[in-house]
Length: 599
Image (cartoon, rainbow, N blue to C red; front, side):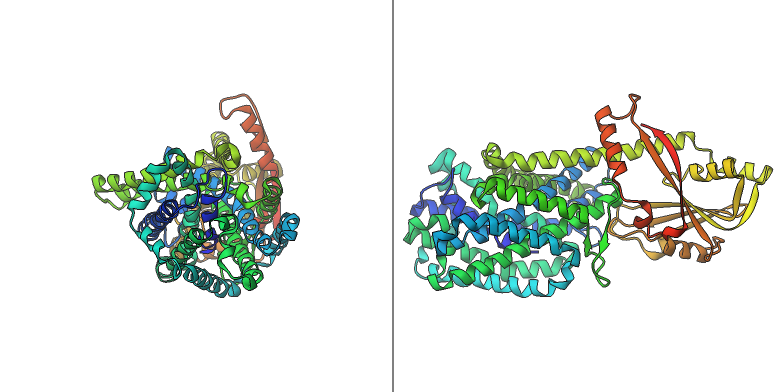
């Protein structure tokens, strides 16, 4: 989970002194940049995220979707839409991070010999293909190696940095924050633009918060302050010391920290760390997708559980291959980590602004913290965040637009799906027969009853499921036991077992069963039916048939969404995974009945 922020030394310092908005590595500039990096790590990562934001957990889960679920607002509020936009931007981060980290590591081969220069992109593409191909086997198979490798990585960062700060201890003058202000005032617009490169040193902060549910708040804080932060600071200071001695080392300042004999081992270790950093973002994209599906912002997709022991380890094939194609396209299109750095940062920067905004609402309205002090603290965070955002905007035309376009496209798709499903539910509910009226008809004119149990799944608990109404109207029969089943996802990650199932007897062998799951849980309908049976729902477990309504969506110009969004919704509906696998239904016991819905 520290892989993203831990691999930033590969390119962050270099971009400050080598690139389109670089400054010359003079004594004043080096200490100014080091001071900016130091206090960015302390203020943004250590204080804002590690100390404060990680207090905002939803039953131990972190990330912008978990933070959004803590906001006491209705689902259509502007704040919730901001949270969804932040989640969409994280997918863009998941595409760029593997590209820039792997490229940054492989470019170290150029420090060994220029002969490798034409092979940097092909080798990077090959590594990425292998990385995405092995995702289906699950991170648990290689997870045991990740921790030790990252410990070796941070120890190596410390040793490499110490080797140079001992020779040039003057770099510790950067602890004085006045160097940061002097740098900005002396360099004017160029100094402001360098903030975009300084921001690369903190881009992993949002990932730390998103991964909190896997490890817990205390282990993350302990690892950060005891290991990660000291290693990063010493390494950055070591790079600064090297630049004061060898200003020409800026293009490969990280790899020049090592002696010549250690370059190849360092490239190998850097590549391993880059793969781990990429793995953290890829796994995060899988988890984010599962949350979004449960919350109703993404169509059902195939989700494979790669570990029988760890619930959070999932694999989503469609997301995996989409990330692979996008990442490889970025590697080939940009060609170097320096060019990719222009595309990197804006998406994460916007997420930081959104996180600060949502945190203020949660702190003042949910935790009841005093508004004035929290407003002042949030304003301070936003001043820093917007300063970085302004600097990152300088890189917009150089590639920064890529992450924004990805975020807007995914946000549009997510909100289209949410709105489309709401419209479909409204149309079905409007023409559905109330359950009370249906039961009255069954009582007055009883249909032929057949043995067994019929489970009619529906997303509209207020009316009779269309599949049930059609079955009685056209087949003229009704099963001996009928279960009307509604599955709902709550705004909490997990639901206690005693609150999982509610059973309401409607008479005539008909039961209304409501099942709740948290947004980090996977529905298991057969298991839920077992719980319902224990609560009094009558059923024959050896003879259960599941009836599903399969909607055919017809775009119209009636009041709803724009026609192009309705057509997009139709495409997403057709490509959604079947409900059978998503709800773990036995395929040989499922019957689907079609219904047309105009939106």
